[in-house]
Image (tube, rainbow, N blue to C red; front, side, top):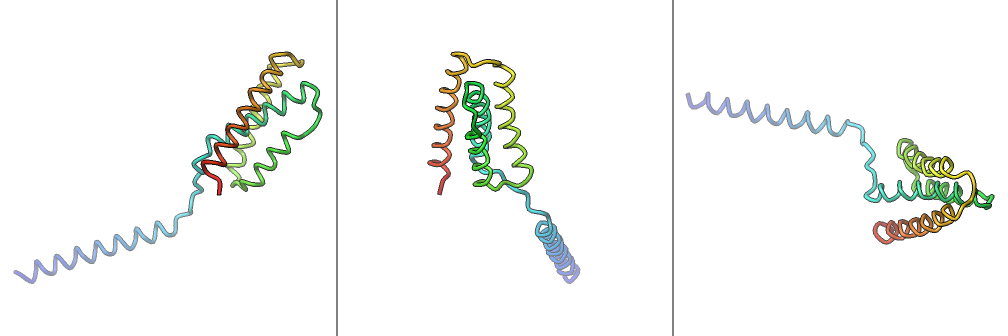
Length: 134
């Protein structure tokens, strides 16, 4: 009878080893999913701020692509996967559309919004670099 207990133990050990090996193989074969960086929320907000400034500054007479170019630089520096890139671009476009729909002419409120958004953009950039930069 003692050998039955040992045989049963051996069976369960082999079975546990087999299950462990199968799980390790499944995990190793599973595709690696991209993990967003810790600063993702701030970066998405920064993209939205850049879009807002781009809209407002062009509305108030600045006919350049400076703020759009900064967004392009951000995308180049981040080199995001396609899904993340789409989210960053959507944030930029949301910021742009928000003010494009709100203002049709440059007003004192639009100029004040430019100042607020530029300050927020500088703060976000500084926080991202100081908290997560190399």
